[in-house]
Amino acid sequence: MKIEKYKTHFPEKLYSLLESRGFNELRPCQIKSIKAGLFKDKNLVVCTPTGSGKTLVAELAILNSLYKNIGKAIYIVPLKALASEKYKEFKERYKEFKIALSIGDIDAPELYLKEYDIIICTAEKLDSLLRHHAPWLKDVKTVVIDEVHLINDVERGPTLEVLITILKTLLKDIQIIALSATIGNPKDLAEWLNAELIIDKWRPVKLEQGVFLNGEIEFVE
View (cartoon, rainbow, N blue to C red):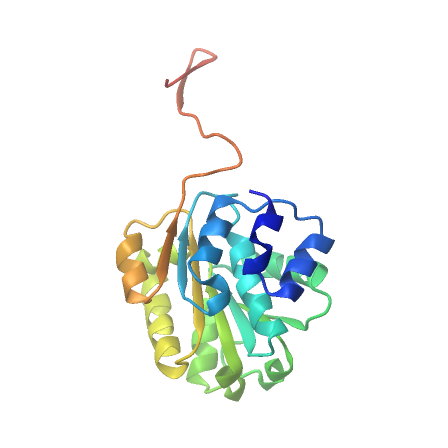
């Protein structure tokens, strides 16, 4: 869908940014998210296939908060390697903001993060920051939880669940954007987060199933 059709739904500065970067079309999950209240601080659970545009939904929520000078953003990923990758992407893409990568010593409150706009970290690191009562946490407005389905993981799940619970308790006005391609119980999760549920099956490349045998693939009709 052409982005210009939804121009009135965008904050002016955000629309100008996308236009300047050559965004001509919005993907289905992005349109649904905007209609569900992305720019009105609504919590969202976005459950759509890989490559469907979930990350841009999260970035728009972050930028909306920063451009309005409402508060800083935290982007939670499950692995240090993913955090480093996301940090490099954001540093290249959003040079106008101060972006920090926090995946190191779990026994440090890292007070310097007060000066940063976007903080990328793992759930375990953020859990540590909460336990150390990092004073800058009160300035957080947007929290993105990537791969939120890991809340069902035996090892990482409990930490993530407790982390979200604490954030909801301490920061009454935060906007939570939860992303996943494989949530088993999206309705339950959305209800728990008091979030709008965004579900869509669109993907950039058609997914086909088949059986490989004797050097040939027989695809399922």
